[in-house]
Amino acid sequence: MRVVIVTESFPPDVNGVAHCALQTARHLVDRGHAPVVVAPAPAPGNKPDADVPCPVVHVPSLPLPGYPQVRVALPSRRLAATLIEHRADVVHLASPFVLGVRGMAAAARLGTPTVAVYQTDLAGYARTYMGAGEAAAWRRIRSVHGAADLTLAPSSAALRDLETHGVPRVELWPRGVDTVRFRPDRRDEALRRELAPNGELIVGYVGRLAPEKQVELLAGACGLEGVRVVVVGDGPSRPGLEQALPGAVFLGRRTGDDLARVFASFDVFAHTGPFETFCQTVQEAMASGLPVVAPAAGGPLDLVAHGRTGLLVPPRDTAAVRGAVRALAADPALRAAFGAAGRATVEGRTWAAVGDQLIGHYANVLAARRTAVAA
Image (cartoon, rainbow, N blue to C red):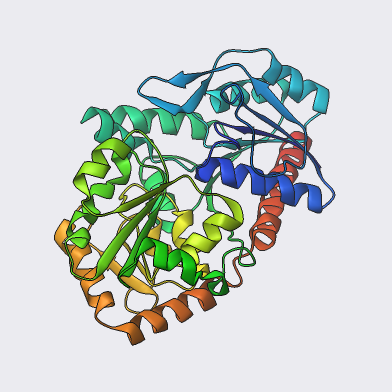
């Protein structure tokens, strides 16, 4: 199968869209298929940390104003040319918004089936950044995804949102996790002594530092005696968060085995963002054997079994986050039980397993197209 993956983000970017697109390309190559990736060009001199298994066509891009870590694709003939030259059987649109919309249009002109992967809560972002615009965001989502042969939602909550807002032909497709890289035995006592020299309980956050992630909700946990908050990631909110989270350690961006070592060296993982369509870092924390604190919203509802693998708290509630961390800090046996249950839960969620599900979705779309043409 010849697949063109049109993605709004790709390594060296560090985010869920980029990571999922890379894992998709790897799995397609492993299964004998022929993918090509089309993505916005990274910033000059910025190279991916991970090996890329297939050709990547970069289209010109500019940094998003106010958020330079995000690159926005400019109009380019390279996209349509790639679809033609690669003779694509199917076009995979990863979180289509700018480049993906152009990919959808190019595929439609060529009569090529499209599978659109919903990954970004644009409506939630509209509320966060503009204080309004949610209805307009859903009109955009409905227009883009309504043109696809199939939309894949990463979680039950995302699927319900899409169907409630009139998006047709939606099915569930979750994300995999690298349980070989992320595992409990990567715990590093030397790193722990560096991060918490007085033996504090380490509560970690991993992700982008941006307004929609609401990392400032960890302020209450910072005030708990014997607790050290450690923040991994970068983004435009970092300067403000360094002021809002007194005593927290900021490690910046970490990737690969280094990130896995950091994960495993936490005692508790806390995620604060209420707009996650999936929340890959929760799975990575669970694979690392950590109890999880997360908002009872979006993707974490599928991932965290409250009272068995972690604690779900009301979104945007600093006191609830503090209370959940306090409860886990006071009970080592509970932390161990949650961590072990979390690891057991994700052991079957490999990228190979979900990658095969994706290939099945491609095959169904192609079969439906053939049936429609024959009719």
